[in-house]
Image (cartoon, rainbow, N blue to C red; front, side, top):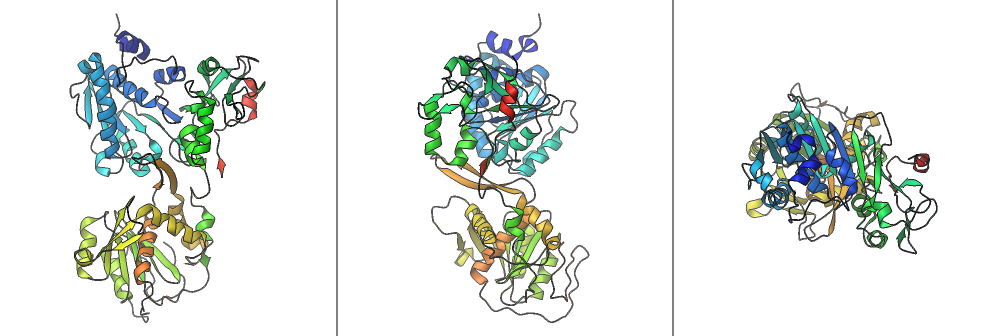
Length: 533
């Protein structure tokens, strides 16, 4: 007889009486909409979901099942290492302890970072260090809470599939902004919706807000006859593809289709939470509200043809890493930005403007920037980001032993600078072509809302691509906060010898050449003309 795992995951679950981490049987009675996603072994998958719909249990069991059945190596990512500890310790390890068959599969039952399952391996990793992304190769990637992960590191993980015969990639989570994370993958998928049949008029439909709720009667209603939908009608349905010729398998799971959730629950969540939280966590939809993305107009409306005289204190903001990406400006705005791989080039800027100061990222390159600070005491400062500070201070400059350092509330400072751009308070000297690459970095950030440990919603800016010049601007603005009113010196046309990788005209004072609404899934046209059964 074939092994149960060779028949189907459902045969395996049933025969071994697989239980949840709480010791309860894995039951599809109220999770019928998860029956098909459990069996889906498509190479690429995406699940756009609300909170608390059973996806974590699905992800744990499918990963263990796949590692045992196929002997594949799996990288399972979560946003941070702390998330990994909570997920593996509080979910995965408890699943294994509750199920003897899983204990027999797994050699390292209580470890956090990896599990040896049969001939396969599951590696659990965070997404905020490159080291984790380059340490192992894999056959399958599972990205949990994709939108809250570092998107650049996610790209690094995807390169770990290059030598596999499988190269599967699955992702799921709460969406954030349109076109980011799971939303971006969903847009390319077949976009399956859970279609139910009205227990009165028998017309098929997918549930949507607010059409599927009668807010006066506090009931779910049919979108055609407007009579009350029974719990059974919502429980029993089928997945229907919006697009039949797309390879990525996609599912949309809002709380509307969870039979244990009442219409009253949905209405209370709508009335007692922010729009962003309601759309992301209840409807499982990306939310494009005012301020969640930086628009091209927000930045480029600050362009000016006025020549920045480069008087007063000059401040350099620089983000460190493989490249040193920097901006240069004063109280009249930014007049130059660029990139280099050599600290000597930044040092030449400090020489060119004798009264200038520079604020650097403290966490990118640990050695080079500190050596530069030692050579330029009192002129080079290291910026340390903080989050959720108990104080209301936006910027805190180091005193005594902390001199040469500055602590900044990252998310509040980013919002502050964005608001200044929107208010046209940061002039950019030059034309659109001069600042286009700079603007592109601003286009790569987006704002999400997540709950802290106390369940309080907090807004946080994340990235979906390179955002180095964004942070360089934050460091510049930090320096301007303290030094922006000082007297500077404008140099004459003496020449400085710059390296070949660094293109800044040393003798010119002209513009330098420059290196709300809810977004529903794409489901209009009358429930696809009420598809036929």
